[in-house]
Image (cartoon, rainbow, N blue to C red; front, side, top):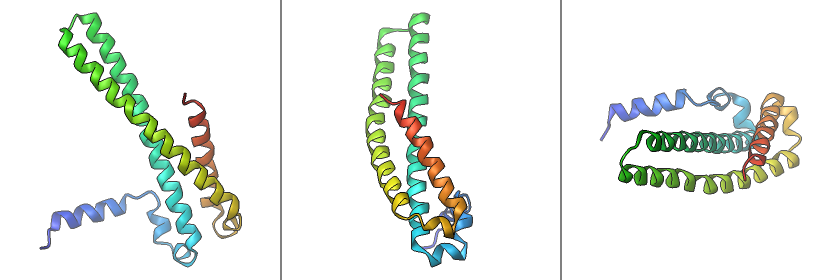
Amino acid sequence: MFMPEIATISSDLAATLKHADCLTNLRCSLDPRLDQLIVYSSVLEHLLQQKLHYEKEHDMELRRLERFRCDGVKEYRIKVQLRVINKVQSMLPNIVFKMRNEYDKFERFLLQEVSIKDVDTELYNRGWQLLNTCRDNLRLTH
């Protein structure tokens, strides 16, 4: 059964991919290492975005809890807010664990496949920039 709205959603998502220009480029299909580079960088970038999102949400929920306490909100609402904070905080260790693993895999890949730099220097350099950003972000994590 064909559903045009799903087809539209799929085509919209494909059009918004950050690396869509590289996916349509002929060079990517000729060298599978470039495809691997794109996948590794996309996964690591996604994990970094998730980590930043949950850290920001955790800070926002802590500020909301303080506001509730200052405003004298009912004790039940404060308990609910504490559960929200605990849920958000519980997401971070798993993301950090995955991010460290992906960071290590991506770093090993870039060190082993130095010859990719000759094929696509820009993509290779962006991979190293992403690794440096993730390394700095992971150092700030407890």
